[in-house]
Image (cartoon, rainbow, N blue to C red; front, side, top):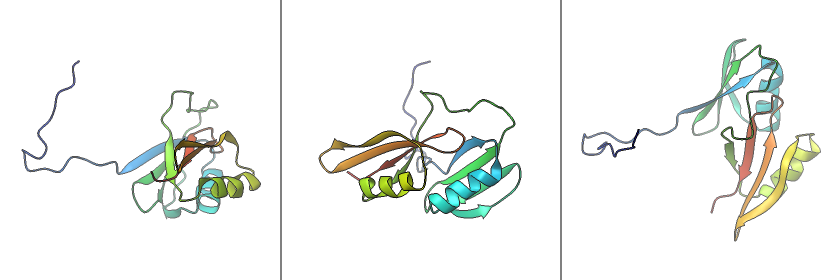
Length: 130
């Protein structure tokens, strides 16, 4: 199916923007502790099946799954968190035991990236603004 341009503005509408990213987790309490205590996110709502964490932008939804297999695969989307100092944020999280899959590296002059996993294997990243 070929992509085509949709006339959002022509129709008087703003294009949709990301509102929530949903991650699948096996242990809701462990996931909430990770995102609240290590990532500093605010718990907006908490339930055994679906919880929401505020980021100051798009929220993160945590959806409980009983699947023993992680849902993240090498080609899974990566949820990126903006950080003005990726190397310092990396050190802080690594000291707390967060598993990084890539050490911080410079994407472009002054722009850094470091990739890591949450306790359920969901792919996350720290990225500095360009």
